[in-house]
Length: 84
Image (cartoon, rainbow, N blue to C red):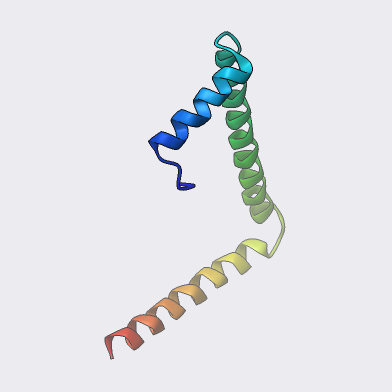
């Protein structure tokens, strides 16, 4: 993902162990896991809110459907260009 291999991760974990100690590392890992879960839940809530807005505001749903159809036609045009 970030170009971190096994040796780099071992060094990072070793430094974290030296700084925080063995008793504190599980607490830090747990807190980090909870933070990531909370962040993902927040992103899902925002995405669902966007979908609700699309369904609630008059005309937006139709505009989204038209955009999807236009995108399909563009994709068909790209396929024809590729086949030539």
